[in-house]
Length: 102
Image (cartoon, rainbow, N blue to C red):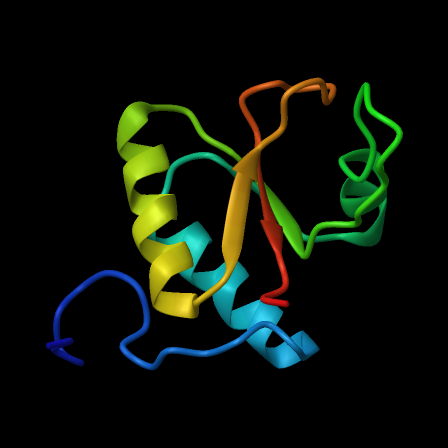
């Protein structure tokens, strides 16, 4: 069970279908990781393409600084019920991108 008083991701599980929910995800990432959290339009556009033919704009991007950031980011993604994936050929290949739940 989630303990609302425990540190870490917000206790409430949310889907990413609004700006407020994306802002909550970004806030959790900023609070619980040391990496760069990029949710602005320019960063989302920059990370929406890679070496493939696909262009899917992410909700946001995390550029982790450590393995702990990756572990925290995955826990936060689970709490927010959103998908994340590693950017394989983006400008910063270690970045994790966040997608709206389909």
